[in-house]
Image (cartoon, rainbow, N blue to C red; front, top):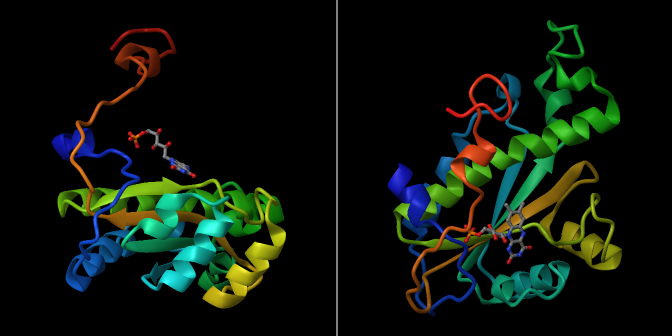
Length: 200
Ligand SMILES: Cc1cc2nc3c(=O)[nH]c(=O)nc-3n(C[C@H](O)[C@H](O)[C@H](O)COP(=O)(O)O)c2cc1C
């Protein structure tokens, strides 16, 4: 697993080769199986293959070319209605039950949950040699940018008022192989033992 994590990198240039549906299914299945708070699974994933929808989503992503040039996209949706639908009434403490944490709390928790399936899908893609890039720079309820495009996207993808397009994953085969160079903070500057600053 660590080797897979080390080999993964954001890829923004894709070849024309198509990803088989079987592999797309495996990637989506990895997302479906991700963990969530009280197993609420407050997410939806929309597989996008049509050029028309890719173009629209590229526009929503402030014109990012890899969104329209990817072979496929997974639109990740944070579904704030899921808490209500899960009917978690037996847990009455707000600290333990996000459904009781108010509108803002529910929003934050719902967006938090989607990160896990996104990570799972990226790693499953990598294991299949399908390259990916996370797209967070886009218009939605959080950023408030490109509101007109966002309204159009929500309508086109069938999203309800309470379903937030949080992230897009671009998918495709790498146009040309490039080495993976990880630019990351040092282990000791992010990891501590017992207290910040104590080396592990
Ligand atoms: C939440 C999030 C949002 C991101 N948004 C974008 C984006 O809008 N466009 C893009 O090209 N890359 C985006 N990235 C990719 C990052 O730039 C990239 O992961 C980071 O530079 C580390 O490089 P690596 O993925 O190759 O290891 C995003 C990554 C994350 C986790």
